[in-house]
Amino acid sequence: MKPREVIVNDRMQKGYRYLLTRPAGRSFHPDFKPELTPKEMLALGVFGGKYMTDCRGEFPASWYAKAKLSPKRHDPKVNYFGVRASKPLSYWIAKGWIYHEDPRGWFQWYCRYYMGRRCPDDERQIKRWKAMTRHIAQLRKHCRKGDLTCRPVQQQALLHWAYDSRAI
Image (cartoon, rainbow, N blue to C red):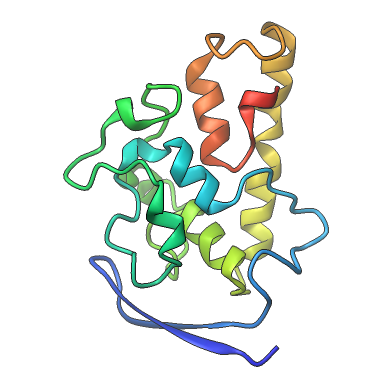
């Protein structure tokens, strides 16, 4: 595959450039097996609909066709489980969890990784994704399979990390 350059100009990045070196949706690290694509996540309702509303030029238009968005403000009602399940970006920045090339956090990294970008932060982000399995164990321990009313914040958080909590 011939690398393709992407130039980002949105509210958080101006002139940021990266290369897509892998085919979209393929050639993932063997330990990284997300259950949901970015397009599926956006259609389900994640991050209160506020996440990446100004990034339409960077990602395929099809990702936004059925996306549940709230461009003006974070709205928990937009989320699949209708609950707030995330901390504000300022919290993640204060903890030092934001990689400078992905100022919006894990989901931005995942979208770019899904599209074919590979970067020095991949290993750390995949480890963070794998760490979310502790929430799956808690849901299995405390909830009946398919009970979408049990621990909705935890289930929504798993959706934010590309795990399909509806199937747990």
